[in-house]
Amino acid sequence: MKQKYLILRNDEKNELIIKEFLEINKEIFSLVCEETYNNNDIESAVAKGEKHLVSVLRTDNIYPVGLYADKLAESIIRMYGTGHKEPIKLFFDDAISFSKKKEDSIDLEDVEDKIPGDDELFEDDFDDHKILKNVCSIKVADDEIDDEVLDSEEEN
Image 1: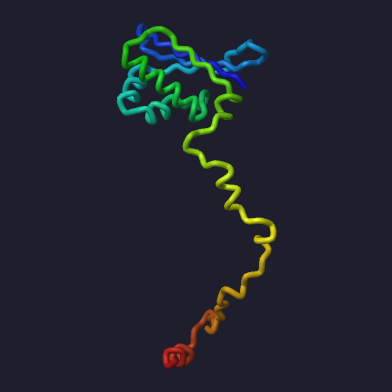
Image 2: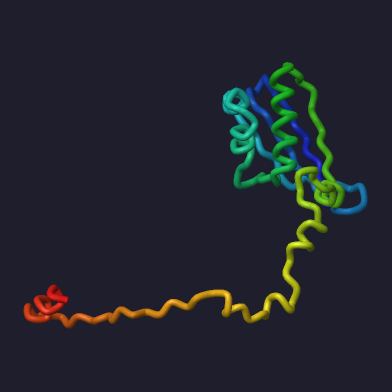
């Protein structure tokens, strides 16, 4: 799926508008969501950092995935930091965005070397472990406790 985001800053109305578009047909995008934020709320969130801004940007209507939310936040921080008033367009292609390997991910070969084989999963290795037997008895008390029973248990 391909998505476009349009970020518009309107200082006259003291607002920031984010429009989300989805590709419905080859190179034809349709508006699926438009969210309006108060500039003061955005400026306050920008001052608190990217993570706080992402939480402000996510609403019931618009909830971009982490990767996209981070890029939106970076663009908005840059927009408010430089006083940039021109609209910002962001384009995302899920097929490309989520197929890229992250540098900090574990190599598949490393993981495959650690996976036990079928034979290892069903091996009987109880000989290597000691089995502890329960030598305590458990008594279930009746609703009324006899003083004699309590006295005899204290003696043991």
